[in-house]
Length: 426
Image (spheres, rainbow, N blue to C red):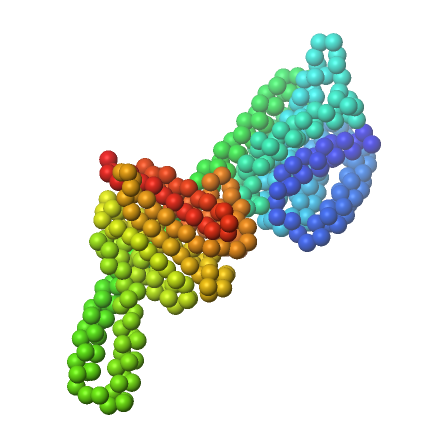
């Protein structure tokens, strides 16, 4: 049992970093089988290591045993997390390496406790041993593991995983062996604890930086996409305006030329086609006209009633792409919500006005189901996670860019998005 404490410590440390990962089907059964196989193989490996030690000179036995055991544990732990979690090999290596760091931090604390004045021991299996590891693991889970996992995965590259593994192997395995062999365990306990903590902290910072960079890249792509969509929509609306205006005069001329039944049928058909002109908005802001006309046509196609009270003049200070992105995302989200409802509830209301020196923007629509909020933003229910919540985030970014405030209400199955912007931008 004495030789199994390190594998058990490592196994529990691995669960700290694997708990939040995406699981495979029958994960509990896989986990139970994996733990059994892991411990069985570790017993076999411990016996083999003991036999190997006997074949080496007495002074080198500790080196062979430690290096061999740590290598076997690493491989078996990576295999175990791969069998339970639906992740890549590099993520398994990364997860196992972080577990090594966490276990070694607990080991260093035990080492320091054992060298304290008064000789307060924390031998394997003691309450002190278990309490130290439990405390370190809980703290690392809350401060490290939870802040590194995104969408139930680790965002790590092959080079990052291998580099971290090699660096930790040097710190944890090689230096531990040397400290034991040359008698500077106390010094090793001090510097190794802070080194492990620093490395884990660095991983949290690195994961956050990667997340921010990915979000920035996605937002830039969405901004460019919105810009292209705006330019296309503007051209389309200009064509609609021209064609529908000409068509009205053509219908009037054709109607005056005769009253045959066939001619009337053609005229009625042309008037139906010209009815699209009713979907064209005519506010005092051409950018707002573009986005509202585009979304109005989509609403008409999907039997959604869009009502709008808009003073386009109050939005003159906004950039064209910002305006298109803000109202495009707001109306797209509303349309997506009401499409799940019956036609009598497919209602969207938009209000744009100036009040008390503030530009007030408000959209209202019905929705079904439950909306979960994280902070002040709703969590997406879409299966596509690549653009997780970026529609509302883009709206929030634009509102903040113009020094405004965004609020969201979800009472009585009515989704209300309100933005208040200073009417006079500095």
